[in-house]
Length: 105
Image 1: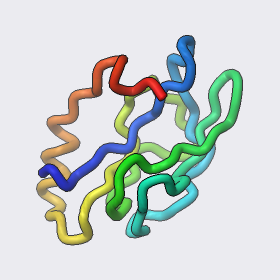
Image 2 (image 1 turned 30 degrees about the vertical axis):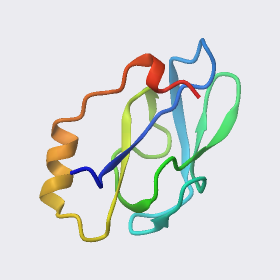
Image 3 (image 1 turned 90 degrees about the vertical axis):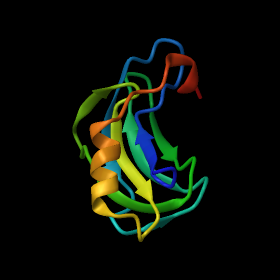
Image 4 (image 1 turned 180 degrees about the vertical axis):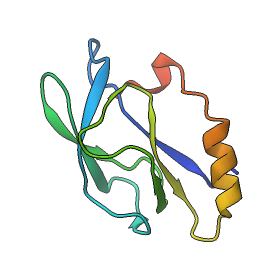
């Protein structure tokens, strides 16, 4: 399952605790490259684009526009186009959020 990569609510700044998904800029099935803007997130201080930190295909969107979620929440899945759905399901079921120092940007 190493070709499955999470998309999470990032932490921008020391005081950020949650973000609201403003909109996804791409649809499920879209190929993604590192640095590509994939969604916009609103915080209490700004609206910012989330850039992909990995390449792959956007296989799942787990949370949509208007949802306010804590930092580190799993919101999407990037994976190879041929990754079995069962592997993605297992990845989501076993998801453990990264520690705080792994999400600071």
